[in-house]
Image 1 (cartoon, rainbow, N blue to C red):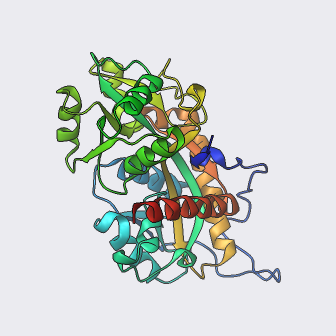
Image 2 (spheres, rainbow, N blue to C red; image 1 turned 120 degrees about the vertical axis):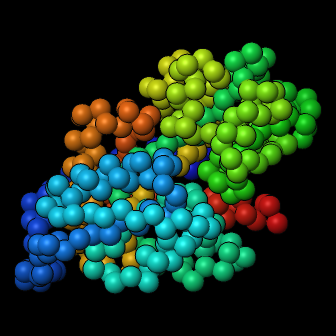
Image 3 (cartoon, rainbow, N blue to C red; image 1 turned 135 degrees about the vertical axis):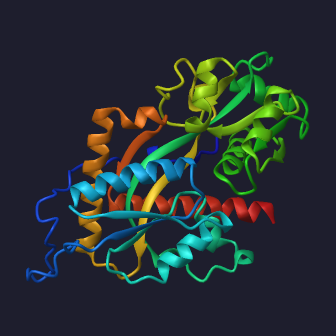
Amino acid sequence: MRKTTIAAGGVAVLLGALSLGGCASPTSPSGDATVAYPEPGKTITMIIPFGAGGGTDIGARMLGDDLGRILDTTVVPENVPGASGQIGLTELVSSAPDGYTISWGNAPITSPIYLDPSRGATFGPDDLVQVANYVFDPSDIIVAADSPYENLTDLVDAAKAQPGKITLSSSAVLSPSDFAIKALEKAAGVDFNVVYFDDPGQQRAATLGGQVAGEVSAVSESAGAIQSGEVKAISVFDSQPSKFLPGVPTAQSEGFDVEFGSSRIIVVPKGTPDEIVNTLSAAIKKAIEEEDAAGKFDQFYLAPRYMDPAETKAYAQQVDEEVKAFLADSQ
């Protein structure tokens, strides 16, 4: 069976911990001391290329507070929404590569910005330097509580019996949930009728009202409704079960080799010194460890999944290749 994998779980986790020693004073390759980073009193702007209140925004503000404490500075979140992240990332790549402007370049939503010529992006993948992966928010499929579909196999069998007739909803074209549906279609050899809702409330209403057979969402966005019994989950697209959805099988466990979700990635502009990139990445790793131990991620149904700069870069390149294939298929 064709393997369709777009997930942080598909990349090896960090094998050796980055040390925070020397974070305040990076050194050059020659061993000479460079300007301390971050400089005392100089703030770091964290661009959040999405609106306030969303999943990325919530996690970003939590990480911003932690980075400020760990690096002994102030991190100022700045929402720059528009064009599915394109406006905020355009602002990032035009900033100085000095570590004082960072941004979220989530996967897979960032890839179409520069892979789809119609987007008219002024930057490419090489203009973004991956610092670290923060969390992985896997996609899931939810249905109404009284839905006849009890698992993913039931849904796929129905789609095979009625090609193009079984309706699934997504938040937007080329959103993580849309890519998740495309990945499932390829892995299962089926075609769904996909409808899109800009408003999450309308999407959920369509699920509850039976206007769609199922809704592809993210665990962080659906776990509360699932736990309350308002809806039920029939599959999660991760390499491992979600602790927030006990008893819900992974797609892989039912024979559909699909991992998919939204990876929250910190990026900086091309040209940012490696010492600064590594300092930021080590601080993010420390923040993840502390947040996880304190149960902060659980409050927002998020799964921490750290990757260092090299791992995150390799993962982003993998995502680019998968998205490129999806875009080619849609032409």
